[in-house]
Length: 211
Image (cartoon, rainbow, N blue to C red; front, side, top):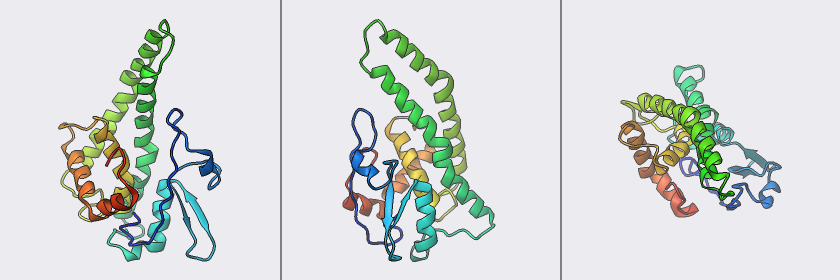
């Protein structure tokens, strides 16, 4: 997003705890919840601290969007409604079951006393097969159908909604959820990875597991 907006920026890294997956205490010094991503912006003369990726994208589009080629939907248009839908769909609908899938797969592999292992594994498999995986499949079916015939979620031009949706979809590809059953999502993630702004962000920020 920062590259698309042609902004100068500094990246500060905070490593998650490998066991709890929680952010470090030092991140709570920036924001009480210790969540990432978080941005600070002092261009107005007063430092603003902002968390939640959707809110960050909306803020940056409102303040810096005119400096980019990203779509700025016309107020009240169907395009604006679609934009807001996908911007919030990412965290509101898609990320929750993906996180549950990660947690229950970790439960299956977490060391426990041998006599408990069959029970924890059975419970995890039950939740995954009857609730988590069917929900994810419906979501991916819907996304794949929504991308059919389009380059990006709003059509032929990249938007903040694409930046927001890119992370859970590339995570889904990396985890093996996306196969030939979802050709539109596969192609979409490949297009994201070919974006010059994405490549430049990797040069400055470094590669990560989904890149």
